[in-house]
Amino acid sequence: MRIGIDIDDVITNTSEIIEEYIMKNNNSQKLREHMKEIMKGNPSDPEIIAFCMDTYLRVFQKVTLKDNVKEVIQKLLDKENEIYLITARGENLEFFRGSEKVTKEFLEDNNIKYTNIIFNAIDKAQLCIDNQIDLMIDDSIEHCEAVKNIGIKSIVFTSNVNKNIPTTVERVNNWLELETKLNNIGKKI
Image (cartoon, rainbow, N blue to C red; front, side):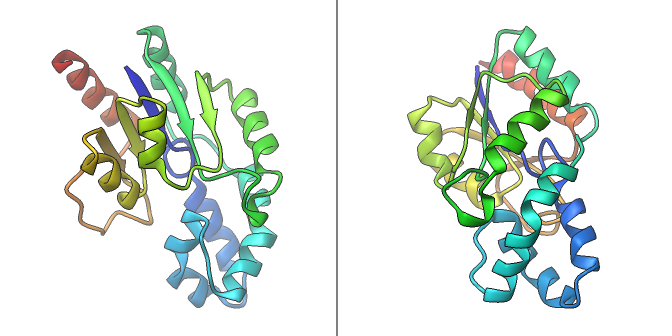
């Protein structure tokens, strides 16, 4: 099976680290109100853009792995699955400049193995088609719904940003829960 996995708030605790930076900012209330835009990397407000420009690389350098992520990904690879990391991080957006190098170093330093990494992923549904992804795991409900709507299985990874947003896509709350769900999916395929 070819599995697409988002990085921020799926593999890493990105929104928690962004919250730390928001708390230190004089405009923390406004930033909290725009957390979804900040996490998706598509802010439009000039103050939010300035925060992102100043913060993203530091956040990407400070994030840590979610519990059990390394072990579950390694088990998936051991079972001959292909792991495609699909992330909006990349060099195409000005406030993500430098993120490809930081991301690759982080994955290497934390011994996260993968088959391929796709940066600058804005239309993840199309990328799933283009890369023949069988299953997409993301914290973005919009991405998961779009992937589901084109007939590809998707799973929402619950995060601080999406936990109260309803969805028709199956959810998991942690990597052990995801492992169980993937084992059950594997038996059906």
